[in-house]
Image 1 (cartoon, rainbow, N blue to C red):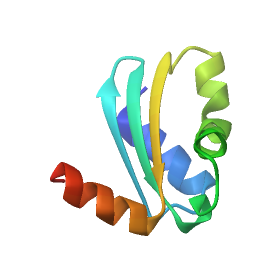
Image 2: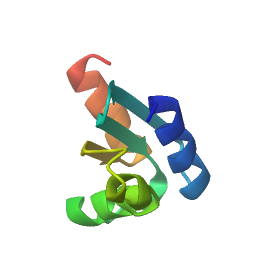
Image 3: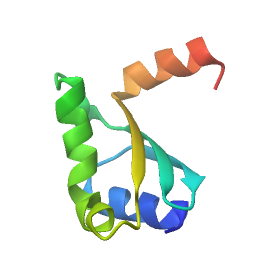
Image 4: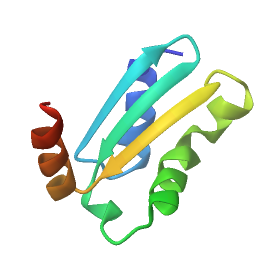
Length: 84
């Protein structure tokens, strides 16, 4: 599965401001940014991202998935701290 395919699935299924997907083969990293994550626990944020990708995880197109989910304010703050 390609990173662009994962991004397209996430952008279509969720109201994301941005999605950054990296990785190769079947191991991927996702950074998702959306106001919908406000007030959610880290687990709930991850469940929200996993949901539209479950069929690809089930058929092993995606073997490993690392997720970071931010509100737009959190993303701005994290980008400054990490030099993005």
